[in-house]
Image (cartoon, rainbow, N blue to C red; front, side, top):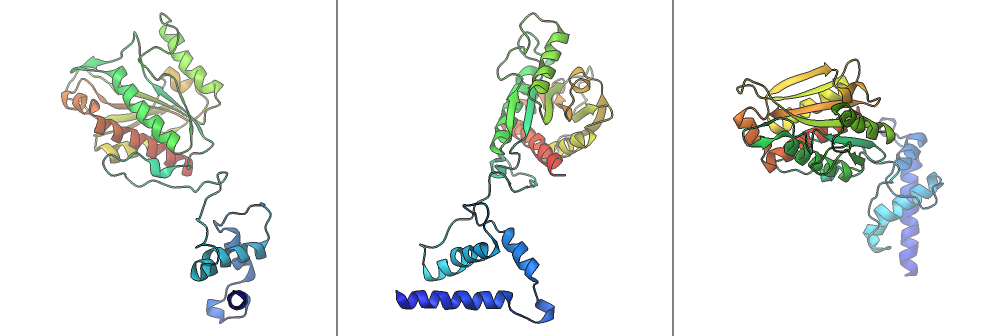
Amino acid sequence: MYNKKKLTILLLLMLVINILGPVQVSHAATIDNVIGTLAASSVPSTDGGANAFDKLFSLLFDKILGPILNIFGGGKATTTSPNNPIKVTPLPSEEGSSGSTDSGVLRGKIIVVDPGHGGSNPGAVDNGTRETDNNLAVSLKLRDKLVNAGAKVVMTRETDRTVAPEGSSLGQELAARVDIAEANNADMFISVHSNSNPDPSIYGAMTFFPDGKSSKLALAVQDNIIRETGAVDKGTSSATFYVLRNTTMPSILVEMGFVTNADEARKLQEDNYRNKMAQGIFNGAINYFNN
């Protein structure tokens, strides 16, 4: 054991000399660079105030000498501070992806998800599907993805009901949704809807934003919806919808597709397609916060 400790100390000194000692100019690392690298290390500090030598010592023992000599049972697992989550820009997901691999990227963000319509107001109804059901199903999947990423999610509704007391006017119903976002000081407001048109041949997804703001959020979400679902891209546009013009945070209203189009109505009822739609909105939200 004594010889092992001597060998450990000797190796430690050699590594320190090699790191901090003079080297050829073409490969030299300045002291500032070395310390900066150590400071950015993901090795956790227990006292929050460790100096550069403490971090160097921890790095050498935990990551180099420990695994080699089995001094401390193979070293520590790398962790990330909960107050400084790694920022991840998600790639297009595979079929059925849940987005759970992005855990922590939205920590500290408050996002209000608003499934349009509900209760006595089912929204557009055609081809055997109701808008309110599509909106809620996708919104619940979106909620789960956002929660997995660390966000605090506030739903305006989680069941088939109105947000304002039953019997309230449309204005009161819309105001109740806005009030939830404002009362929670939300960082983002996402309203989820399904579209309709007298012409059943029209189909595709589109995203609206309040005039003069939130266009970047709308573009990010729309691009990712199209990437995930393969839906026809009907673009983004400013709009004066009540929930957009009366919210103070970045806000969008997503029209996922047309229930009046038979093919799109069928897709909007499929669990896999709903998951892709939620994944697209989720990816767009992350891209917006990361850029």
